[in-house]
Amino acid sequence: MVVTTFVAIGVLVVGLLIGWPVLVALSAIFVAVQLLMIGARAAVERNDRRLAARLAARLEAHNGEA
Image (cartoon, rainbow, N blue to C red):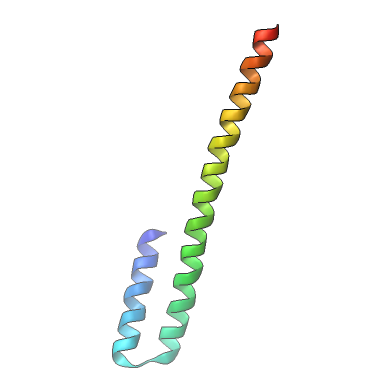
């Protein structure tokens, strides 16, 4: 996903250099969506780690009572 983002940034620069506004617009939109997806994936992974830690603590507390 990160490699694709860098390729899209490269295409954006090439589009700017050769003067193709449609290529520039599509590349800019693609880069924005890719960056949003990278941020969302990081947020989900962080939430998964927090949830796993809370679940482990809850299971440990439950096993301690038994």
